[in-house]
View 1 (tube, rainbow, N blue to C red):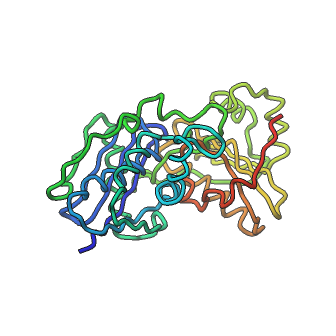
View 2 (cartoon, helix red, strand yellow; view 1 turned 135 degrees about the vertical axis):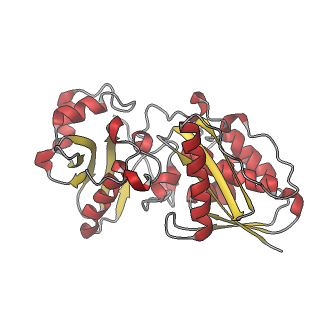
View 3 (spheres, rainbow, N blue to C red; view 1 turned 120 degrees about the vertical axis):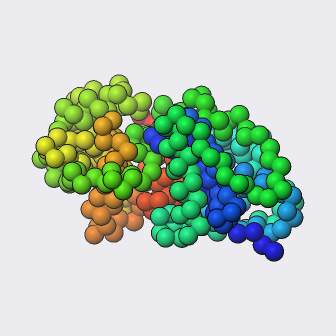
Length: 329
């Protein structure tokens, strides 16, 4: 008999309180998390725990997952990473390497098929796994330990790897990478926290340059950016904002584009009092809708450890990364 399950992860703040969860049915599910971790750590650990808890069953396993990053890591990239001593093609260490090594071990001798499913699309198992992961993250945010669930009958699980515990050293994004969602909320807001009082706008005249520079000077990727440089960047970009009921700006992002073949999303930031209220979702969905009529062929962004989040908005890993090059100024 084939085991069919869904696995998902969540991080509030990314990094921040994080959770993972997998779901088979109402009597077979599990979740967990950490006070501080990333979305990718949650996504990976959900699959790892599912593999470990079902190892004794000896049955084929189908895993529904809304993260192509996770699926590709396990099914496409892992073999090459191992051959290179757990290094990526650019020679840099593989992120979350301890979880990856445990996933590699857990996959040995198993009959596992991964199926990608679009997140928040009504898929019953995926929605249940997402609810478990988000609930675990919320529990840690509130200083509680989540109920781990019944797990898989007869399971003997291995301890969660140290790198998945959510320590600041293992989960903090690299300072030279614009991990855009790092200052957005990572998950859907609760029903009573929908952004009714907030409005999205692509009106360039509404951008508050003082607020933008002040907020970005507190970020890890633009802390040393001068006001002059920021103003020039804004002038050469299509800027977006979210505003509260008083008209004050609470979120910002800009897109560099030719409105035909290429776009680059960057400098995404949300004010602290707007996080966890759906402001980030309002901002990103508004940008996607604004650019849609131009049918831009490629819209890129850079992220160190938030791949799974961007996938929910349509981004996916580069199909041929070996073709891309960069020249740093």
